[in-house]
Amino acid sequence: MKNKLLILLASFLYTLSVQAQDADEGPQENVTVAVNKRYTTEMNNLAKRPAVKQAFQVILELEPQTTRELIMLTEIPAPPFKEEIRAQKYAQMLKEAGADSVWIDEVGNVIAKRKGHSGKSTVALDAHLDTVFPEGTDVKVKQKGDTLFAPGIGDDTRGLIMVLTVLRGLEKANIETEADVLFIGTVGEEGLGDLRGVKHLFSENGPKIDSWIAVDGGELGGIAHRGLGSHRYRVTFKGPGGHSWGAFGMANPHNALSRAVYHFTTEADKFTREGIKTSYNVGRIGGGTSVNSIPFESWMEVDMRSESPEKLQGVDDILQKAIQKGLKEENQAKRRGPDLTVDIKMVGDRPSGKTDPTITLVQRTMASVQYFNAKPELRAGSTDSNIPISKGVPAVTIGRGGVGGGAHSLGEWWMNKDGHLAIQQALLLVLAEAGMAKGK
Image (tube, rainbow, N blue to C red; front, side):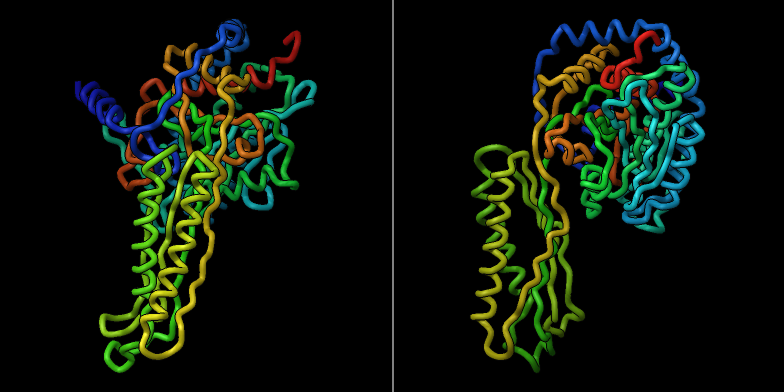
């Protein structure tokens, strides 16, 4: 009875929020698109094949192991820019699961390759290694009933376990694909990591990838086919500083920053009230040494987002003008001493874009969701898929299943309520994209 109550409570809480993709809490702007019957038939026929049925059964039987490994991997810290220890363990797990080759690339991504029969194309299944939590965060998993609590347990450690279990399902059911399949754990998906892992994969030094499937959503059914672009800046106003009485009249970096924030938010508010949704946020501010000192620097970190590259650039332009206006006004207001300067550093650049919902990958993703009696919901997300989407490579981000919440918080939780269905859906989608080898 207690477990049933916990399930009901968790499910209720889950309906009140959409699980975060890069902490994007809040209502999603979903798109409704019909699924072509061709892909519904394809999924139904594929799922009926004996080897696929066997792989589904393997996934179900592996549930106790996937839970144990979820706990184990969650308890290996992976703070921003320090994913190495988790990466090494994950590489070992992929090798033991049967990948033909496993390596860690120059930036720290874990890549496992399962060779296809023809190898003429490559499908990638990805989840990210890093969490948002700083070094020293307690990541010990606590269990209450059927619910697991720990920072990062859902976002995106559960995704890593899904990727690993899909590989195991293919291996244990002896399924051979036509295309090569890469099973990937990326670095730098969160925050100031700025998608550095997936950016490297799609650089000149990365492997050729023809189809990209990321696991970084919440519920079974959520499909991110649109990349939510973002620009992030760290802006620092600098001056000599001095005593609040003795140096009074010198330009104050805090004043310049305050002026810039005022001008930025005033104009950005007008700009973002019309057209496609565009957001802006001054997220962090700092600087100064004491209440009786003119600070020698004042800094802020700013985040701006939009699905529209034009709107994103528009709000960015407003920020740049506001910074220079704030600087100029404070320098003109000073009574003595040198002018302030400003340093503007871009610390995040996630491109926006869209994968057409009528293309094969999106249609297959929707059809695979429907096969498991869930409702496909197309939406935007800020995930690893932003990069391939921006480069014209078919890409989607799918959900990790189960129920959960509190992403990016110390109280993050996840419960394995039919979580195996999301893994089976991922396997079915990978098979549809990679193709089962003829005669197999």
